[in-house]
Length: 92
Image: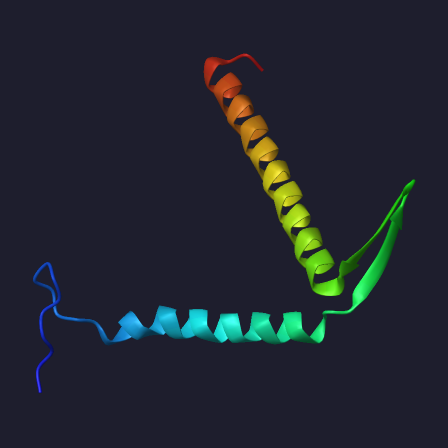
């Protein structure tokens, strides 16, 4: 049995099902995590106090951490780029 060519003339790849399968497994894991961590958690910081589900608190914390890491990486790249330009010009 031969594979039918995919649009564009290339043969269909059997790995085309890998990414959807990984996405489905990830979605199931995330759903199980959310279901198991629905309980409210009281958060107090400075003069604020609020109650969130644990899963939401974790997702927000991870998101903020990723953003902080991305910003730090961008600043580091920018500093290196400026230093390389200065070295090429002989400014150092």
